[in-house]
Length: 251
Length: 251
DNA sequence: CGTTTCGTTGAAGAGTGTCAAGGCCAGTGG
DNA sequence: CCACTGGCCTTGACACTCTTCAACGAAACG
Image (tube, rainbow over all chains, first blue to last red; front, side, top):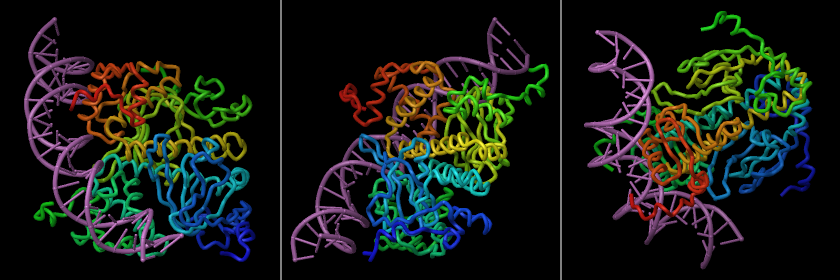
């Protein structure tokens, strides 16, 4: 698709010029510090829809900052059990699962044509020796990933199907908003089955709930397109105090 | 209880003399590197059963290496939802949830009288600038925590009640074994409700399943005492291919 | 344009949750 | 020492949420 895809692939990237400064690794760093970040020598890589950025078991070499697109991470067991552990969008860092064991513990796959900056881990180690701000920020990013997963555990461990899906939609909404997109209208890049895997439900349940939310006037759904009409209503569901307006319509 | 509790509390601790070297932060480091670890100036702290090491919202200052005892971490929402996110034993590092936001995102509570080494985070930052092995190892510990949580998400998101409890018991068993305790006989330091919260079940379900496992000859349960009789049978359950010996007794 | 993947919906059933009652055990005060 | 208390655990009966199975429709793709 490119006149010279190889050259493009190996393109040197500068954080200091990147429009994701505010979201990505450079977050909270000074101009000078960000310029030191540039020495991480990230190379860009395009991941066509459906292809893996890395697979479970692959040797771990780099972390990846999502520049563009949408990806999912999946763990799967020998017996064929499968769990989507997260969806990733621009500015998020993926691949941290690999540091511990030298191999990736999950697979990360593009759900639409995506682009990432590959950051060799050895470089992160080196540069973080010299740049306290990077070191500290990197720790914060990993910590936040741990806290995010706590949130998912809360969702999976103690919420009803309705609450899970509402929480999931609000989370997506908020992340789109943080990236300058509409918080009320967006496209679900993943299938119902992938949503279901992530929130611990079957795809039929996800589909039914979306229909029910739509019937209750909380949102409009058209295939992958979602329009959140009543975010407050969704929030109410997440907090457990489901709105009463549905009590009269027995399901 | 101590003649001079304050002095004891502030006791200087040396990783190089600690018998948890093989499990804790020093894992995989050379003698010399471990001696540099000693400069982390950890202080020990005793946590009586039922008391919190830190609470959600507390200012984050230190990480804690568990020296002795058994603790749980819990996240709770304003609405009163509660989720146990992990149980911790000797050699494990807790508190990493606090790095990201400067405040702890969960509460960690002792389930039996416990003892931890407090490691000021600022010291970790300083020392990890100078000691590559510590820096790298610290990253590995955080990464492994992320991977552990992936495993819990898999458990919560895609396993039946039976499979969850079996997986939970095997996990405990393996961790006890790694610490030199029996892998087949141990004491559940937590209540049925806490197990239930962790694996996403109600306490009655946990209780019933323990009884059923006992009836099927997989284990013996006496209050908090568990004796795993047939670990292979439990593994079979986790992997989905439940043993056939129960098929004839319809439930 | 056929084929495949994805999504929706219905009916029926399994698996957990809920509610309730009672038992066991440790700690406490008489 | 015993009775009392409260927390924890067990077990049963029943309700209900979610899954399973199945059929069909819609969109995406070569």
